[in-house]
Length: 117
Image 1 (cartoon, rainbow, N blue to C red):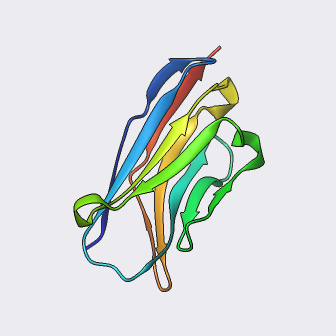
Image 2: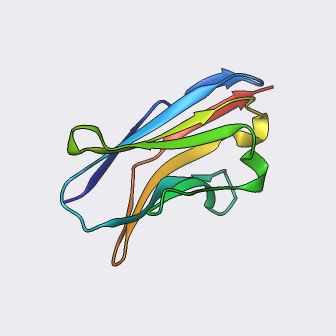
């Protein structure tokens, strides 16, 4: 069974920084993408950033230049990090880790990020 364990959310003032991490455990096929989505109240879940299997990264336009995603494979563990700088109140949302293979998509439980003005 695949598990995605997230950490690092919290409350921060506008202009501040946070780092999210997500560690994947369990058995799964080759990862196509691993990254972060977010969902604000009353909004649809949207892509924030992701790493692809060829080593490239994708970012939502709203976070380009402020957020950085990176991936680690230390100790046979797949971990993805999201470093968020210059946070804005509109970044407030529940952030979900996502892992996609050719056949399945997995989600973490979500971590709340709240940015106060």
